Image 1: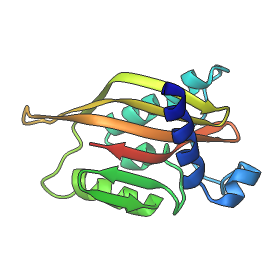
Image 2: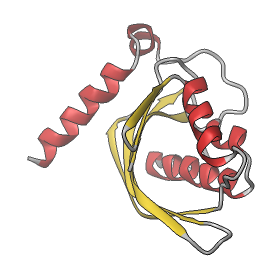
Image 3: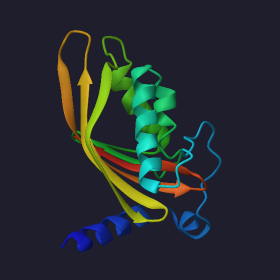
Length: 162
């Protein structure tokens, strides 16, 4: 049963990518892309992407946070009761929710991170997110992200956060 779930997720990851990416394996150039650490362990590389994202969020640098996402109109983000397609739409959704007047980014932490490799260039990660706000309130939820490796860099191609 576990193997069937992984096969399904691999098929989903491939379906989210346009045909030309499946054949060439390289996206259009993306500036500021997260760099894979010196480690040759793909799980460590994926974990480094998530850590880079968390660090950028806690600096309140939404642009750097977004560099971990695939800069493509094919990027998908599902959160709450809404979906965003494309890097720009995902960025604008985050900006409206966390940088609009009266909003704040707070301090982000991850927990219970689990990373599974689907192929040498595909992985998914699950975990919980915790956001501490200045007024003492907390928000939290769970996430599943699907990542693809293009060249030496891993990018989130799909994010489902609750």
